[in-house]
Every structure is written in C-alpha cells, then in structure tokens.
Length: 221
Image 1: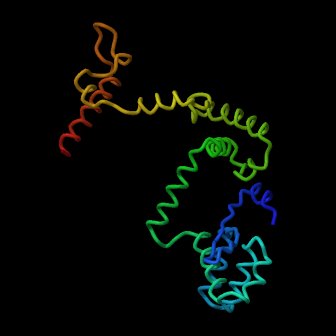
Image 2: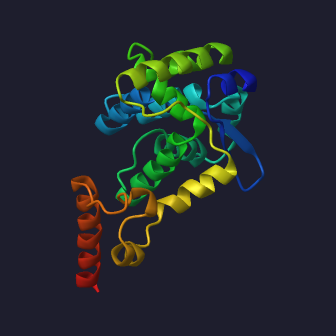
Image 3: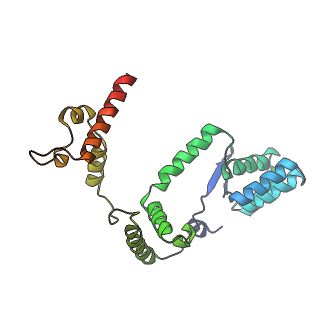
C-alpha cells in the first residue's frame, strides 16, 4: 500500500472502523467503474458474491484484510462494498446530491482550481490532469500566457492577482450597496457629472436601475 503514490494521484483514502476497533482503508471507484459495478449488481447477471469480491479487491488498500473475512460475520464484506458504492457515485437522494455539489462548488473556487480553469480556457487542448502533472514553474508560465490570451480576447479585464486579506475584505464591502443612500443622494461621487453638466445616458440608466430595485423592495415588504 503506497500512500504517497495515492496522494500524488490525488486519491482520497477512506476508512471504516468496526466495533472491535479494526480499521479497513479503502479508495473509491472511478465513475466508469462505479457504473459497471452498479450495472452488475442491478442486473444480477454475475453472482453477487463474485461482484462484491471483485469490488473489494479493487478498492481495499490492504488486500491481506480479505483473508480475514472468513473468520468475521458474513455481513462485513457487504457493508464495506455498500459504503464504497455509496461514496463512489451520485446519490439518488436530492438533498445529499445538492450538499455534495455545494461542497464541490466551494472547492472549485480555490486558487489552484481557478488557475486550472483559466489555463484550460485559454488552451482548450489541456485537461486539468495535464496541468497537475506539470512542474509548478511550468504551470506559472502557462498561467501568464493564458492571461495574455484572455486579455486580448476581452475575456479577462485585468492581470491576474492574488488578493491579500485586506483587499478581500475591501472587495466584499464594495459588493454591499446602500440602496436608500443611493436613491437619496444619487450615484457615488466618482460617477457624478462635472459641475453644471447633465448626467450621461449611462449614468441615468444606472440611477433608474437603483430606483427600480428600491421600488421592488418596497413592494415585497
């Protein structure tokens, strides 16, 4: 069992602990294998015992554990197999599916995943797995090249930059609009017209949008 190799392959390692304290480590099936095993279990073309045995041999990290199952309650192999299947594919339970998807959305916003998205967007021939196999110095070069390509296409408005904690807090505050203040005072000072001149059509549209939003809020109360 090479844990380091599993980590390099980004394989998550799971464990199940039985009442007697015994721990069994296992990995999950890829989606293609999950569907194959699910199909075999549903159609019952192959004996269930055979399917479960093949599944466990595919996923249990320490195969010597399999030799001890003969001395344990009969339900243990099926318990592990059911757990592997439950974690390896989409859940039919809508609430659980949505919860897993929400966790994935948060993971997708990490710096590493955003780098992958930008590079793959600029270089469609790349797969995320290709980037993971590169050295970091190569990834950074591809990121800088992707930046140039996306800016030239107007798909990126400004150079990429990792924000500091203070900059993140400032950005979050900037997203919050005081609708009452905007309606009462008009647009922020930096968007006001020069003294003695009328507001531009764009500024007028912005102010009308704010007023319309305020009206909708009053109607919902």
